[in-house]
Image 1 (cartoon, rainbow, N blue to C red):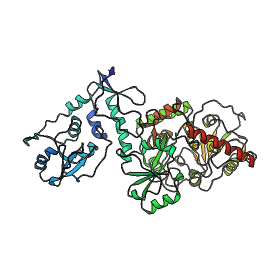
Image 2: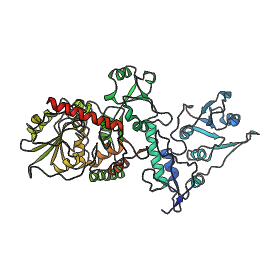
Image 3: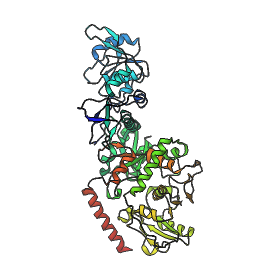
Image 4: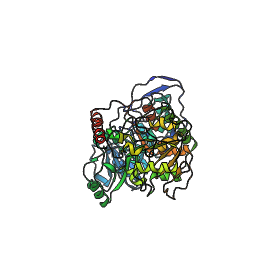
Length: 545
């Protein structure tokens, strides 16, 4: 693909949605002599992208309606409608037309939604709207607004596609590399799926102020900013409410549930940030689950159903394999990075890493199935492996002084041979033979590195044939998965990611690249104050132990 200098800006058919806080507003179009047009029309039609595809989706007549784009052409539209409903789409919002009992829609809307069940487009609109109508096989009529004369405009899908894409490529907004039109269409389709999943989201409850700017683009519905609720949000209980349940007031959640609101569980993603959430460092990924939190084995989550029933094609598995390679080679974990080699303290003796957890964390309280103590976990590991060299790593939030779960060293060393506090989890996993966990994500990170994992609780990755499970894994988990399928589900499909450089939702590979290159920006005053508080709390606890 031969690229020439960037073309001067114009209103492109393919556009970057105006996500809240985004620092990039559009694609850079590049002249490309050998750009191919093959498959463009089919893929545009399948993914329904082009024009303002993120915009509002107003209520419309059920089907067989006519869309008119000019108030002056309404009378002609009524004649051509053959008694079917007429929708006046007044994008400028100036018509105020109320005659003939027509539907009036004002402002920017999703053109694919507007034309999906239409039988005619009258008034034509711009070339972008004509292209969408042509792709949907909807006839376009022109109207002489002086005489009222109408005629059917010729449809030339190939010509419209060529006028938009011939000789054109794009810059990838995340990498700056050259991207074909088909690749740009796929990226727009990725954004469309995200926005469509948020269409009926009415608000968000329990989101700390320092987290909201990173979460807002991932929950955006395309037409209105995310409403972060302070109260119970009963006024919008007819819509779905995204809830960060651990930080939401229980009485507010209970009130929403009594009002019949559909609650959507939001949690940190599995590749989160360079630093701790407890230090007020916002997440670069979240999970959004309409069924259940992924760590609650009492009921199936969307992630569990994906692992139980999902099908993963060869390109997705290839992506998963490469993503895992990138994560392992960069030494990435949920909260940071570290890949330095660590010596084995006991030579050839069997080495087991036991990661501690925050004891009052929801993942422990529900997924631990009764095992909620780090000390009890250590005791069980020692019972399972009496001759092993056991290394215990406290959870980073506990080490930072913010959360519950600390064990006095003398008690810890009754069962563990060594406490490894500051060493990176990735380096430790690389050194040991096995990782034993309650529900810790460290077990999943060990699977990425092809280490043997034993679970005592029921994390999301237990029960699929990849781990030795001592906890009460639900009998409904019957599918056997390979590692690439687990990675595809848990890292590519289930979470949502935000690129810290552009402020745009992005594929997982972009966040992995940013974290690998340490591109996250300054921590800020809130983080510094939170870390100072953690030091004080650690000091206070050491005085009472």
